[in-house]
Length: 470
Image 1 (cartoon, one colour):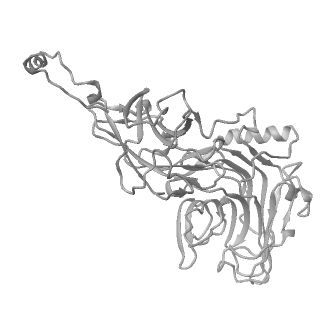
Image 2 (cartoon, helix red, strand yellow; image 1 turned 60 degrees about the horizontal axis):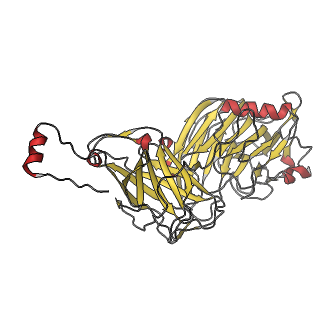
């Protein structure tokens, strides 16, 4: 961008005195982009352009008129990419990311990520401050970024003219590669999908009414569910996980439900826990389930610290694995972990270490009873994780806790180690799940989730799975 200013001797000075000469337009509206990355390798799991937009002009800049472009070379002509905002001072909810194509392109750029804003304003001299952005391949393979036009390996913010800024189509900052100037609006990623009248959506959906005969029903496996039988955490060391603890009783009239049963007599050998999980292929979008929580056991003495759950999770491959993630609804009817009574947790995890224990998470809690049926909705989109219970927003998390790799969906019922009451009388706990629903890459309001589920049930559809395996 040119910042040329000139004076034409005394005549210009005289004209200026009577108000006939103004500063050039580019001096009034001027910006620059500063850039760094937290993923500086030639290859990366995801490209991480962290940006700071600075208003260097003399007038305020309306952010909804601004577009920032980061240029890169696609790994293949058909490769699709996904955008996410991990954290931003201006709020990830105000930051948008779309992808466009440069044709015919160059050796270092045939695509671009275009960053926009839904609102806000930058006063003269002000900046957006840190915007921690990222994008990744839709198939989650590693990305070669060393040949990307806008890529740089620096870990500190610096002015970067290989990223461009446009206002209403006019270039304000940077040098675009050949063919990289604004063209028709790019398609958003992920693209909008579904509607209340289209319960399947366009990006894929999973719906299950749990209409199975027993834990041996072959459709359970065919529908990509697994009933856990292997030993290990969480819960009581040495506890077993029998498949027969998973049943499908009739509830709410004619509807069947998934039922988890866990029992204990206070000993490791006498403790059984239960878990059902779907395959690992879920990331952004909406997750929902109708879950029945209980405050007391169906048999035996009360008081055990037990955890009743609905959650998503990525496996921990090593201590403090940066690719780990987990989003939990966890109900503890008798407390636990230092809590004395009923508590509902919504917890979002970045990672953890077992020995010595280190938890990197954030949580929101409510200390009331949640006994009975509840509609639980989890929305993962645009750098934010939102938890809803019965249509009401319960928690909003984001930043480092936003998931980065595909996850499985799980329901489990387990006892906290050290939290069993001092009784040898066997007691039995249950948790039920009426249905599960997921809309890939779509934010679905809780009320709309219920409408879609009812549409499936009215049509007699008990199972749908159009989300591809990762």
